[in-house]
Length: 450
Image 1 (cartoon, helix red, strand yellow):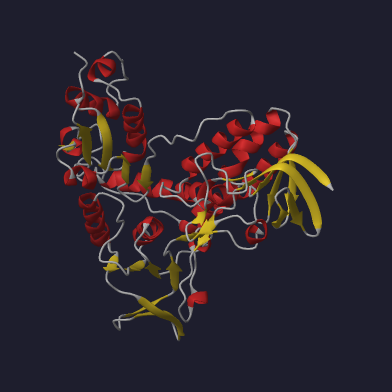
Image 2: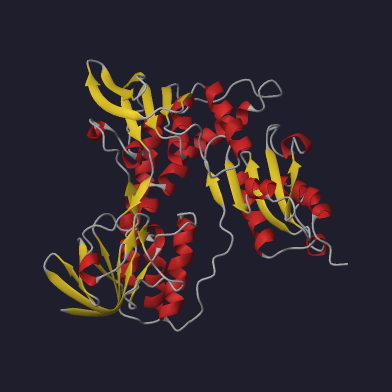
């Protein structure tokens, strides 16, 4: 029986950051992984998506110059792009495994299951540890309907060697919109079936509606208030049928109706670890109700965004706890981004919350795409909504525009540090960069100390 200071079940961002920190502190550490080392984001999610997304972002930006210097935009070859993606992404798990082993981390391949509070069993072999960290993440949810097994999931889509001519996405969430955007720009017929009356409920709905209109103009066909009832094979493809009688025939159907935590077959019931439908229940130190067992990342039951940066933050926090820190976890403001064309991003107090509480907050619109047209590559529809508290401190932001991912990071820092106008005016920024225009527009709106 092998003994460790800490065993991590799962090898994604929710665990490996902590494992590396502990190994560097000379702790004896093991990582157990039943699937692919480095987890979903690295192998089947964020990294693959942003790699594939790159050429689409560039071609969309070129379109903004049509008639003012650009008359043609290049075509994207999905098959070549996918081959490039495979060459970059596939080696990552092997590279990460080598790094772990070089640091002295024991990598155990197989499904780990708790047999007691200090023991994990893998393929009949027991491994013990003082502390155990559960970071098993989530997986795509599957609808309980006839023909559900005929649908692809996000992992399948990101491995498609050729783009189907006809695609239907089930659900109008982040995954569907990001994938549909690429597919329609390649010329595919794209449908999105959504049970609810709108898309992306967590995001600022004025921006969401602008995005929906943009996607519709590109060719995406939305079907809201439609509940998928079945998927069946037809002579020429697959047919999606809704409860209202809508039928759509496609070459492929992608299910994207959410993700569910991987809590099954971990031995949680045997050890008495509490869960709910959102995942593993933890306290403010990320401990389960079994004190030496922690949980990290998307498998935790929480209302915070289940994102890679959140998982990384939790992983680093757990490492600190195991090295002697005692403070409860204190989450900073967490930005969220939808990588469509254009992008959506938000952080902090939402516009909806601010509008519902005008005594506490006020909202300032900055149509920066119009004001800073040439700096933002003639993206005149780009828009920024800023949320301020009673003292004019920036507490939230929502962005519609291609530059949203980088811009939201800048605004997140200003929000987290409660930056004042005086502080910002004492900084010197590169000019004529795009972001400096936003800073110049924002500074007069911020709280002043005197």
